[in-house]
Amino acid sequence: MDFDESVLSFLKPPLLEKVLAESSINTFPKGTEILREEQYVKVLPIVLEGIVKVYSRFNDKELLLYYIQPSQSCVMTFYASLKNTPSKVYASIEEDAKILLVPVRLLPKWLNDFPDFNQLFYDQFNLRYSELLDTIGHLLTDRMDKRLYEHLKNKAEVTNSISIKMSHSQIANELGTAREVITRMLKKLEIEGKITQDSGEIKLS
Amino acid sequence: MDFDESVLSFLKPPLLEKVLAESSINTFPKGTEILREEQYVKVLPIVLEGIVKVYSRFNDKELLLYYIQPSQSCVMTFYASLKNTPSKVYASIEEDAKILLVPVRLLPKWLNDFPDFNQLFYDQFNLRYSELLDTIGHLLTDRMDKRLYEHLKNKAEVTNSISIKMSHSQIANELGTAREVITRMLKKLEIEGKITQDSGEIKLS
DNA sequence: AGTTGTTTGTGACTATAGTCACTGCATAGC
DNA sequence: GCTATGCAGTGACTATAGTCACAAACAACT
Image 1: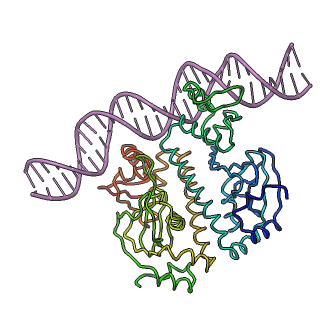
Image 2 (image 1 turned 90 degrees about the vertical axis):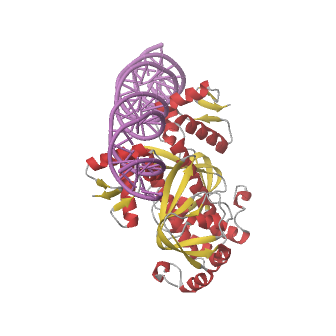
Image 3 (image 1 turned 180 degrees about the vertical axis):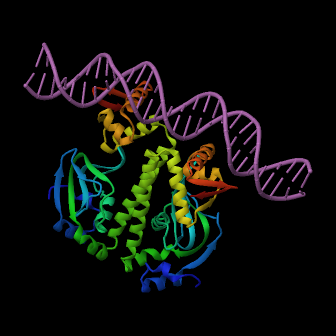
């Protein structure tokens, strides 16, 4: 199979072999929606390359929850599949991605045979919970300009690039606010010298 | 030991025996702070009676995260103890509580010997994550009057009583807002006939 | 009963961000 | 080129909730 096996190093060899034997690898282009709310799940995705964005929707507002980076899995999907309950979140491809799709029917057996496997999911659960706590903290105490700036910095870090190509309204969606607010705040950040904007491209400085 | 063993029915007999043999039972009065942020944890609490409140603090603002009810455990403590990392949240006794304190050093072994035991923590993790998602949803879309009313209804449900004895400023803390706001909103809810206030006691109607 | 401290009630003000209505720009397709 | 579409920029207005500054009510203790 055509990918860097080191991203799966968290799977010990005997388990790794079994997983690879039963799983398939798919590639998805940027923008593909891979998980909708209320959807039932039959495969557990593990990201090999690229970035997946997980977000939630409240009425008409959206909010970015977290990014799944290579060697991470979507723990929301994991739980939804394990318990056969519908998903509460959405996921879409943020950067062209290569994803290992592990069939869910074998998971309980593997978790039973390789108890260490559980650690992976505890870690992810904890990570996501912590991130959500941080998000709440920002929501509760920070004003939009700061939230926006942190959001951009985070995005830059995740995509490993200082430039971001997104429309103002896409950003507004991710932060659960209105487009005009983002336009104004970006202008403010530009005046403060924290970013530059040029033909739809935002650069951190 | 003096408590209703049915609250521990999620532990299968062989495991239950081992756990009880190694654990101690303590009672705590209302108001006791049992977990602070940054604290390291050596025991996993399982609530047998009473209610524990788990909350987070951001700068000077506080926010209620969830209540731990009988037969539930604090999954944040679980993870913090498993990985020996400091706690990110606070916990205090909301209603006089009897708590089973399970020593953490034996947890990894039990999780290994009884893989089903993991389900309990997955369920709790998922529950708490879902609650946090809901909280974010409310924070993002609801106005204070609605958030307050939902908060009171939730509190009434958890304590199994339609009356709440709390000062306005305590409520304000739990919702991460200012006291005057709560005073005004309570008045508003009173006028709308949703609650009554009488000598520091709030009753849902 | 009087002092002290805490809780509640309120009016006035402010700041933030969300909404509305519109203009100018750029790009894509014909 | 022209037009359509979507994106960005901006001023004006509004609503919500947070802040400030008190006053009144209540409780707790001596």
